[in-house]
Length: 493
View 1: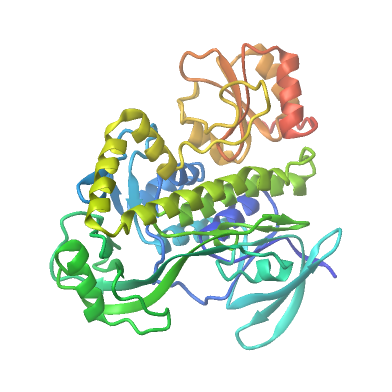
View 2 (view 1 turned 180 degrees about the vertical axis):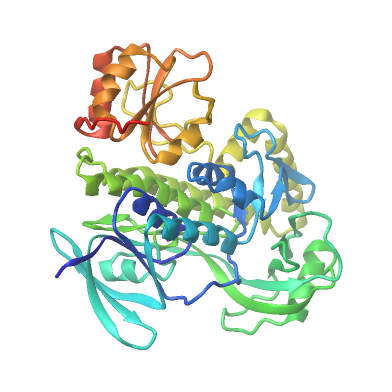
């Protein structure tokens, strides 16, 4: 059977679309299959955090997405506790509130423009793999089925992932909060904040604008816990909004309402042979903190360049396995953080709520604790394991420093290559060593004073760093992280 694609991605949400765009941009043949037909305006996620915006900036999409929503530089968590995002060390020192379909629209446009195929109205119903590829059985809406073959498969098909079930992987965890309500409504009165949220102990509610006159409501009533199958009515939602927010703001004309329970679950393995899991297929958690979509997109950014390297033939040993080593701990940390947030938010008795508010003010008022909280929520503090004795920068997010050629670092990342950033553009050690890897590494000079030479991965994390390294040290680092040298003469102009 011929290969239909180098990589078959199951699921055309933000995770799958970002991955597909990256792979296609790197020259890989990529097909995305998606059960849905056409664009949905029933958005699920609405918060885009700073680290995700940096990843989108590295793809030339961040500023356009930011123009679609509201920029929140301070978030009210509960009571009078607020989280100040304006001090984040990023040009995206805010939380962007925009509906998920806006993120999907930009990512889909990029994926198609780069050459990815998207097969709508098609679902994966089974797979089997061997040493050289994966055969996936697909079914269209009209009931017809076909089997296609790909070199790799990525399941980005959500919490009920068919790919995960086909692999026979467990999805251990538990329910955290039951009988939460979602609705998209119009309001007769404008709420006081771009993101309005509060919890009283007996009720919780959140209002987020879509920018087109519609608002997403997330609501929970401690004293009305019913099964997910129980119908949701506008009177119940308005009553819960009044309990939590003090007003229902004249909510009317709902276009969609549902009830759900929030689980904390994580698959033990993100890779099985030639099949990978990303996003909600690998981990789900409470919506508290708005971390779900962001974590999935960062899964995709971590995996895409590694798959491209494997397909291009230069991946160092163990590179594909590093996806599990790096992203599984991040998924676990997000589960713990979002679970802690939701438990704090729905704290019941008044004495405990008073303690909660006191601790919340202490955390947000003490600089080191505030930096830790905002770093976790924004994703900026995420770092990957570094070898013993490595430079202090190794494994950390690369800051968006100015470069000697007038660009920012994240603009330079748009080529999808490694960046070898030296103290000077004409640094002899970096230039001499980097020439042999010119097909996948760009050698650049820093735009300000620094003693460090850093090798930045395509996903914006620092693979290696050293202060005043020799040409031999640079060559060793490039061989370890970028594979064997394969000089390709630069194209004139």
